[in-house]
Image 1 (cartoon, rainbow, N blue to C red):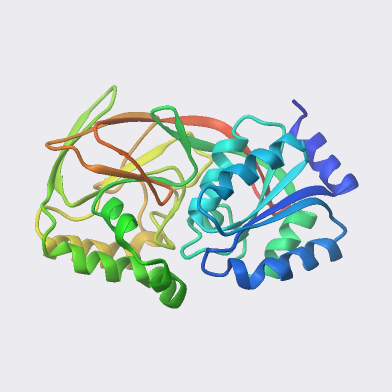
Image 2 (cartoon, rainbow, N blue to C red):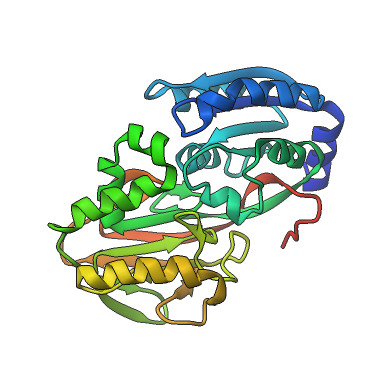
Length: 309
């Protein structure tokens, strides 16, 4: 395994990369051709490029890309695409470059990657390799978050066409339609030093610093060896709505010391009934589920001035 500096040097000198773009993401099809051109103009040799638009094709393309052993794998899409790439690249000698072309782009925002395509390509071209944490849901790595309860049902039911038309607002619109018949969960969060119980429609466990395109707190990030568990509202639908609005408006002013955040390295989540679980925007199983940090598991391209712990 090369050091981060050696991998950074190899990327700058050889500029050898594979590009994979989710053409079904909100901006993927529109920007695939532009991404190829901009990366080529920046001096990259794209040894392969994949516009992915069929179910199951993303995983096959990622597997093929890894077998080519590039210095850099550039993934364009939303958090589901980025999460799939992160899972495959965990603990590999390949850096992940991000083109945030999705709906909320939470992981890219956590890492300070610009949403603008030209600016994101400049980060890939002139940045450096850093390593960041991933979470583990059981044995499955995740880049950004695990959602338990309503969010998993929203992921199952949000129409792709609505996401393309209204972007990140598709999720709250779908949630509003589902809330009328959603029952709250009794949730237990167990750690080595504490037990916390909540009654809520929604629990998140975040590795990154953003949720729904907004900051969770001012100090949550993907390089602090912590997962952050927090309920959104209480048992009533009114409290869920109020907490969603409040979190979006005040997340940048709160810290991990505030209630109801629980920042730990490992936890067990149990619920009074099996509840669906979504991992980085993809529904993957149900509760109970054990979660922990996989420290410095992923190498990514970030801006040259990014602090790397």
